[in-house]
Picture (cartoon, rainbow, N blue to C red):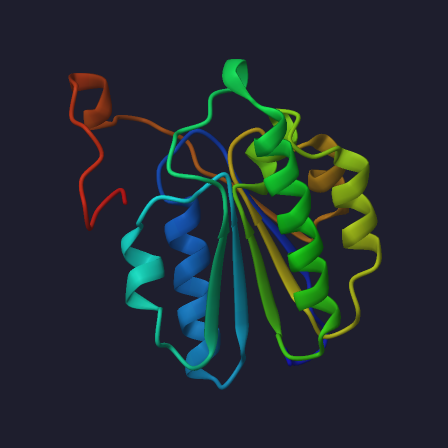
Length: 174
């Protein structure tokens, strides 16, 4: 468990690095003996962080997406089902008593795209037991989550090579 008090953190904004920061926090926490659970919404592709942590004894990573990139305009019922199932798995992890840090990676985007209702997310936050730190990542953080959070960091893009046509690279963006 996380030493009390435990807080809710939100990493949002259009800049690169939200997921990377959350995984860095999980790695740091695990170095202090804290078990971590990372639930990745809308992700099902192979990402380096999930591969690297496959056999890590203190960090569990699960994905609730498939291998396609979901855009707001092409959300399917299957995407909503996966997100709802993921939220249930995250809630089970939070309530298990096993994890001191739980990351809901890309949950803000899942809410923005209509895969999850913001009320479901807020209900989960309100039911968080003492001693469990939560991190919510993704662009478009809902105002309700920002209001409920104890720490909010906005990642702002100033310049990105993606605008020059550079695709996501293994080991850097995925």
